[in-house]
Length: 377
Image (cartoon, rainbow, N blue to C red; front, top):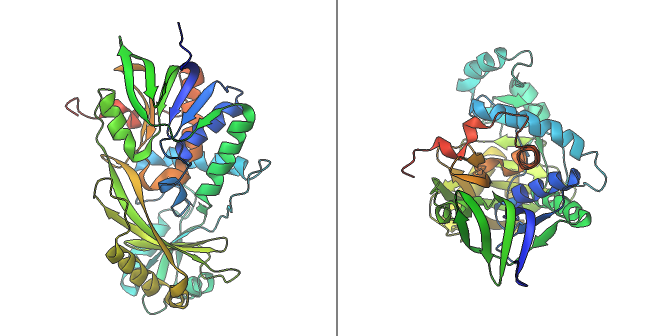
């Protein structure tokens, strides 16, 4: 018998970041609304989902090939989202520019030549110094003399998109509960029977772990011990009004500069410091100096910058963890997106909703299985 402090749900999503909300959205879109999203914090998207560059990458030559189908699926789904009623999240197809020095020009030109025609979902163009200056007039002319340009890439506001997902979820009847941390599980015969939160017990048909960097801790509570860890990044946000500084996502060796609507963002860095989310002044200084080195006119906005830090969920090997483990029949993982939370949120939401409703997905998720890691984890 279910007690007064217990409730049954069809799908329990642990984590109210952009990934968990995307899964809720795609379930609601399919009219499956017996869903609850539980978020440990008092607000949604206060961690990496609300503090990131909002980049949607197409397949890149420097990204793991197994991710390419996910990027292409997200690109298709973003085309649908930008036309959806009520979805306003500053989405623009500004492309990505990887700037290079004069010494790198030949290498860049040869790379672009390999993909003169769209191949495997990749479209990349070589820009010489004149073309680069025309596209990005504020980029350092002394430092950069060429670039690789990925015109299919896009940018958007991650926090605004998550809010759009959340709004649809609530309108459709999905329960969104904040300030509710999962404290334990009752497991029997390879199934989660109950999930304990503060003051209540949830009895789910399916559990989806989408708790970002906290997913590793949850996996250990479930007896799986997945190799996940938080990696801290920093960013500086600047309100620039109607002043346009860059048109594309400028991807430097360690840091990036991009503009999303009226906001300029300088960020990057990777620090393995556990769950310490405090701002590191040295990292902020490094990011700013590198940003100014790439885009000298940034210096005029120095007094307007607001620094923040976020914890990104990193899974060993760099690829996300998507799908079921053969050790727990009714648990699905959707985590470990690292720097690609915004970019892969729609694809993740769609594919995980298929697993929940149909026990299958349009894309083969074997490469992302939680069982790909050695059993000693």
